[in-house]
Image (cartoon, rainbow, N blue to C red):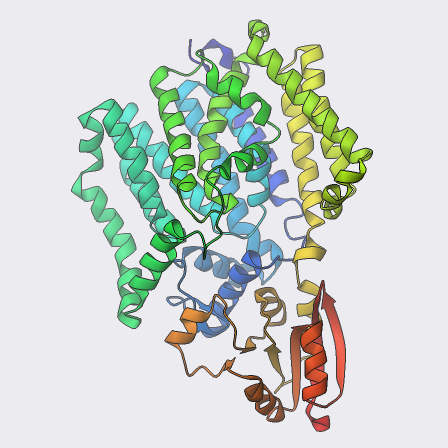
Length: 550
């Protein structure tokens, strides 16, 4: 019997959509703007959107007033649009990611409902909403959540069009694929191509025939080519830089682009699926629930995402975000049956063993956190930004499987997961003082007067620019602005030598410096004057210098 079958009794569409709306509002809206935007990613994308509004150029993204073409512009357009509507705040900056995460819950529910009924859709969406990696990335301004949502819409609707004969979904699937490319680039095409090709290999020629229809590829061309052709016309170097250097080389060259071992995404997946990780082996190994073909597609979907990025030499944790939705549906199919009234599935040895191991692991981790041995004190000290919530999160992660095993109530799993999910945003706020230069940027903004300039001495912060509204003059060093410097060599924002810095300072009435302490010592000895430290962020200083003393 499908997971939805008769076990969907009591799970009306109104009940499911009501819970998804409430959970989405709380998990992805509550205190969304509380922590400051964190460098490098959040500061970068917010600053690009701010400069888009400031310069009035919506076609060529700029960072520090230099062309920034590492990624396509759709996410910047969305953030700039929200800035123009509700102001340049942290809440508005993160809103596109939060809406994409919230939309992912409805997508999961809709797919689960189509595959197995209301109960499966509800449990799959709840698993996804409360998975730690999904929740955290849904509350941060990055490209990854919007990219994952668009890719998952494309793959999910494409599968429904193919397996359920819902031909009207194909155009939406291809539109979503085009939007994914406009968010992050051609990786979306590769993922869709891998999953589509594998589906065609396993399930016959009808899949290939559906995917090769010219009108669908015309949709991609109409949506994608205008921007890419325009940028190529403006900057002929763009295709080589964008396609080769930042996609092919990023995939093949782990030295320059976040080199990690092949097994890197194993621990990442374990962390991202918490608190549900302990049940994944049980859910994947079950033979009941989803029909064989649907289960196979979900495994194919998640597995190919993990394999594709595991073969990449350069790796970042959020890359595997599109794999969480199909895994949540697989896990949701098992939980949907466990929570049914007859509870016969509690006799499954794999489930009992999973709950016991899950509980034991987190009781041990809680004990080690509260009473750390000397060898682990330094490691546990890394969790300092998350105090005082870390012990409560560990306690919930230990209690949830324990109480579920004792009382044999599947709903306790969801209650515990929601409790952990409610604490995670509060714990995430602890990173703000460590990662966000908000106070530095706001201090600079308070002190700025017409004619003042900002100089980064071997240091650059996109967040400082966003909060202050001031771009940097940079003493030349390698940054993500290198390609932009090539495209706009006469922008006047790059100081090539320390002598250039001395001459630059002499031409301006007041200069603000963003630098580290060793460079501050050099500054005071080589450019005599009066300096005042205005703000600090970790080991970085904001210093004001007055020209009349130079």
